[in-house]
Amino acid sequence: MAKVKPFRGIRPPREMVTKVASRPYDVLNSDEARREAEGNPSSLYHIIKPEIDFEPGTDEHDPCVYGKAVENFKAFRSNGWLVQDDKEHYYIYAQTMNGRTQYGIVVAANVADYMEGRIKKHELTRRDKEEDRMKHVRVNNANIEPVFFAFPDNERLQEVIDKVTSDAPEYDFTAPDGFGHHFWVIDDADMIQAVTEEFGRIPYLYIADGHHRSAAAALVGHEKALANPAHTGNEEYNYFLAVAFPASHLNIIDYNRVVRDLNGLDKNEFLARIEKNFTVEEKGGEEYRPQALHNFALYIDGKWFSLTAKPGTYNDNDPIGVLDVTISSDLILRDILGITDLRSDKRIDFVGGIRGLGELKRRVDSGEMAVALALYPVSMKQLMDIADSGNIMPPKTTWFEPKLRSGLVIHDLD
Image (cartoon, rainbow, N blue to C red; front, side):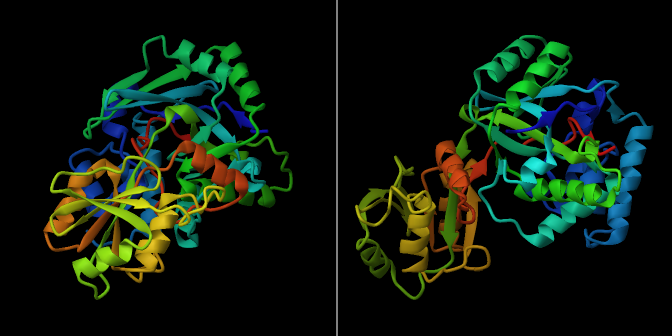
């Protein structure tokens, strides 16, 4: 069963939150972070992307960069830009996009749950990315940024969310990208106990987004446990920062593909090859969006096409084989276009659905890419089924939006 606890969050005073809060470290590069933080010494980018305080081109993995993160974190606290709560709390963090709001509970999640598989993952992680975030957690002795969890809908936890959010939020602002962010402190002892007890009845939590941060945070906690001869399991380092959302609140959006060339084929040869496994219907110049599972949208030479996978080309009883990303990767990208490694092949790129189908059209029309393929989004049920089966999704399958804003609350490992 999942083990969580409240914690003494380190967070900005209300009047500072919009200055401190930032996008996550991994959704923008150093130059973009430098521009966003320009003129704002209290931007969290100075802690999560501290290379911005050095000359452009400085290696973000240089030891002096990690040292700068520590220096800046200490300065933020001494300046009063980040202040630790006097008591342990849970928190509610809600996000609004396109008029729809999702509500998550901010918890300290258990390292042992991650190490022993009660926190389930659906993606592979890369050791180099894990090590970067592990260094960041180690030097700061804190989880500066949260990870993004899902859990099966739970009536009692939903009651807590509804009760807490009926009052005015501690933070309430719209970020520059237009997404709303709302944050409440759970101060009632009975509610805090209810959250702990109810999560203790949930068998598994699921990583929705932030696999590298989850791995890094858990591994650092595990390191600290091994290094402490007096370890009891109750130390703060046995926990890491997460925002856990009821599964029904979350919306996975499409994650699409663009390819530079047709592997030596002309357009007609390419479409003829596709017709072996798909029913192909020309849709013309107006944007076409996939309508259901196993239906795809293809854009090539100024026209959209509907592709529907023929029966027998997929296995609805296989949690991986049923995925549209598997069907398209095997039958189009691999068999026709010769792309076998989605992680490393330079001929393919990936476009989050937040950018819209217009971005696919633009990249093909510009001549940069030869063809675009839009996929029907994966469901939360599919994600959880795959995690439950112990399988791993193919690369670039899920895209969650909005992303968690960093800097609303931090977890100290002491």
